[in-house]
Length: 234
Image (cartoon, rainbow, N blue to C red):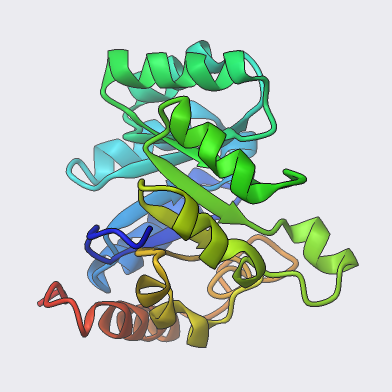
């Protein structure tokens, strides 16, 4: 179901150092980006310390910890909540007990839980399960490795059916182009992510552009995504 969540723009900081993540986040915030994601590469490289640093530098911005949790759900969400995360990602293919544990920790610590349907054999059914178990958002995700092996794989293949099946806000990630992004809110996915390989280098986990170009690209994305919503940044 297409909801009424206002469009937001999120940057996925798929980088390997806290220093690079903070630098890129500063550019993104100047450009009007709303949410900051500690991407999985950053979580693997720097852990909760990266989340703590982002929270210290950006005290009011939502911070997503892309944990891709498969087990130990309560502890992982608790750790990231204490580090300053406002959102955590659990995998829809995890055991239902793990999803419920993430949701419980989210309720206990005031963190929103995002359920990711990556690798689910039936993404629509998986999205319904995630919503039923209490997830606040659904991520329709086509993975990096999947896109390399399956020509043409894209969230567009599942997005409409997932949006129709759930009532929580939806996000689409993976294999999208910059010119796709402003189409997403109208397609029922108002949580728009900019990340690899759009602004993060396709192969090297570094910013794909110089600072000035990166800021211009992000400003344009923010403008296009929000131009029809009345929520465009000043």
